[in-house]
Length: 472
Image 1 (cartoon, rainbow, N blue to C red):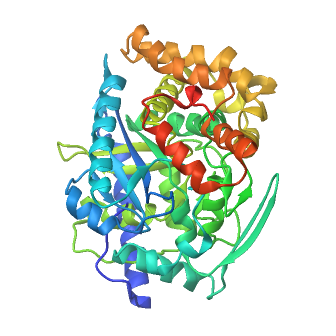
Image 2 (image 1 turned 120 degrees about the vertical axis):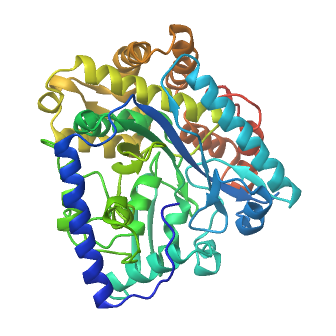
């Protein structure tokens, strides 16, 4: 959800003073980094999952205010639209049984949320883009009642001089549209994976997260349809990038894969925030500089697909997290936890065994891999370390899955548990059935009856089976 603010009207003095505080807080964070004052304790895992509220017909149900009031759980919070909510998991250490616990917690929270939604005639759905959402649903009448979102809309349009946002997404079909507000972003729901990490290891973890974004988005793709058009396997990627397009160049785009790897320190990202990105939400806060409140609010309005975050541990010590944002929501609780297991295991193994990774996979190639995988899913051809070429599917089956298993074992996850979760990924790839594939096949058989498809999707989501076992 991001930090809430208290108002949405700002003066030029607000912008100036906010920028001054970002400068001061960035300098303080740099000092803490240099002096080794950030939390360097054992790594922790966490996640957020964005979800839809839908009615019996499979259409968006704009009733998150009532739902959240009845739910009354700090782990369940508003999102941009009134038909979206966000579920959070508690941070946990890497240890035997961690993914079983992560799934148990998420599944229990999901079922409780669905029961509360059912009481008011709605249902929970985890999917990258809801195929039944229409452009008319994405209007300001359906924006959540938070000042943060009202202000975000006003400031994005101010930076665009009032010009509408333009969509242009081309694949099997071509979608061209204009939209007058930021509500297009509400159509993009994701599963965001968090890794709290020793700041000395954050640069490498950030760079490796960029490299593995291509296989991650390919094996998890779940967003092939938007406004009736059949587009990318993970259409959420271009949709989000275009839905808050306020940067004139690659140096100031708000949703971005980035321009390069971090070369020396993760601080380079926060320095780029300070130097390159205009302030969107200049909410001045009566907080000490040590809270880094303005730095964190500013960082929250720059949506890198891999985003470094600053948080505070239970002890009050500041820490660095890497937020991996490329994975869509769904298709099932089993699938999203398996995605997390693959990400954490592969990241750890690459960090330990792949020397000179940035030289062996140049940033330009990693970026090309990412957009190709988002568009074509498991069928995408990519270039891996040392110029090795092939399909994403073959790369995952032959190389990355064994590495992810080895990495999880390095993190004290038992071989049995690692196999149980990574087998879900292996079967998904071997059977060529991601959420995107299932949706495309359903439409091939039954046509573009999206309400019926959403109802079938919801039934399978409640079956307790991963998507590789869904029928259509």
